[in-house]
Image (cartoon, rainbow, N blue to C red):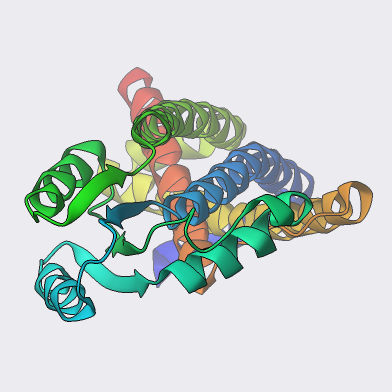
Length: 282
């Protein structure tokens, strides 16, 4: 309680420096939040595209429907498979005419074969798993051909991996910059109270006792900066939506809470580094 009271007293004693620190932290976390928002929407976009991954097995003409249904039931039991849809020649014709209306007059029921459309579960849409399912489907003797957009799936998976690695790398870079900025702002507060710290050391105060209020202060500034950064990020998202006319996803409650807690952690780390360095010199 004493440490918390000391931290709050420091806020009141130098409000301008406290506001400057919180604002600096907020803008550093705001940049981090904007990057996180972009990464979130890219991930969501890739997931929506990934949901369209589908294996289409074309069935030989005059194959009994009972045989196709039995194969459909077997394939649906694969642990990687979400569902299997039997598409008859009539359904394939209707779908082709709907999707390619300008060429509707060139299609007829005999031109398009029946098929088994296999959709995979989330987490099983990588090229290796898709090839595995394709090989299993090809073993049925009535399957003429299997199409699954091999090159498209490979490029999608590669893009997702690149986005993931780049996201982690840039995220760590932004976090490091935020910690450095937070540490610099806390260091200003430490230097402003250096005489007080020296007196406390002379009367026998331990390093832990001296450090604790600064750690609490840094955490509080990190939380306030995180909340302000979250508000700024939300406002920026709304402005971009109105300007660019497209919908974007915002952080859910869990991610928003995690962002604020990250601000507190960054403030704590920045304070610990700055105070520890100063105490070694006193």
